[in-house]
Structures are given as C-alpha cells and as structure tokens.
Image 1 (spheres, one colour):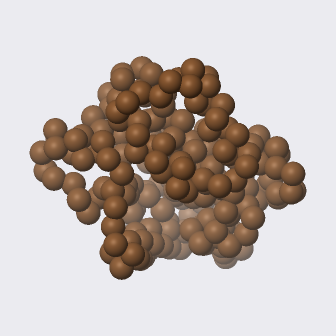
Image 2 (tube, helix red, strand yellow):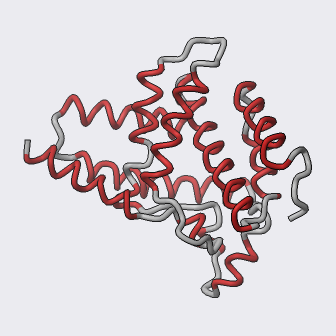
Length: 213
C-alpha cells in the first residue's frame, strides 16, 4: 500500500503543473496538466460513444487518465521546445505560426520526446504491482503509437481538447493566435466525429467568422 500511496502522491503534482504551451503564450493562470486530463477524459468518453464503430470505452477512459502521467518527471513538451528563444515576447511571437521541420528533424525530435517520457513513466510506475504497472505501460504505449482504434481516436481527442482550450482562451483574452490551431486540426484530425466537433466549435465560438490571427 505504501507504494500505491506514493504513486498517488506523485501524480498529484500534475494538479500544480501548468501546461507549457499556455505558459509560453503568456496566458494568465493557465490550466494545469491535471485539468487538461479531466476534460479530455470526459470528451473521450462522450465523443467515443458517438462513433459508429464500437470503441472500448473503459480502455479509452483509462488511456485518457494515464496519457500524461509521465510528465510528472518528463515535464510538458510542446512542438516549439527546440525553437524557443529566451525572450518571452519572442516566444509569444513564435507561437503565432505552426512550426515546420524536415522529416529527419521531426523523427529525431519525436524519438527524443518518446524516450524522455518513457523514462519518466518507468520511474513513476516502477514500484507498482506488476499487473497494474504492465497495464499502464501498455495503455501509454498504445496511445503513443496509435496501435488500436482507441489509441488512434484518443490521440486525436487529446489534440481536440487543446484546440478547444485555445479557442476558449482566445474568447477570454483575445489570445493565443488561432491560425496555428486550425492548421494543426486540418492536418492532424481525420476522425469524422471529431471533424463534426470542430465544425461545432466554429459555429459556436466564432459564428463562422474566425479571427485573422
């Protein structure tokens, strides 16, 4: 029981860890990693049930709950990490466009991120009961690689939750710049249920009049 209590204590740190993507965009009181996890889990459940092909909702929920646990030790990573200048104003300026990398550079950065996060996850779960440790590892690996229908759907749902948060911040603060989020959605989201959800956000938040920035 001591090891499980320690595990709960460690993952509780995520409640106080702001998501780096909002920090570099200079968002006031940015959401924590745990706050993101809370909503994306509910989104995965409800949107997952709208799929015409049946998904394992229990698996989907577990995947949602554990997908960012590695960040207790690995920290939060954004696509801008390797490009960030020290100047905060320049950081905000950088996030007004979607970063582009060569295929070789993209593979290198993804490998570095994966290895760092895998190491963080292993450290976090190392003292858990063997069966629980293996389940968390398998769920995380499935999410990272998109091995199952649940893994592929959740990877896109995870992006959609961040997309929705960006829109909500824009409505409140008139930032961050919205164009990069729409470019990302266009390039990375192909699930029909999630595309319908994006269209709904467009109509609800923008009234089909997206901001120019």
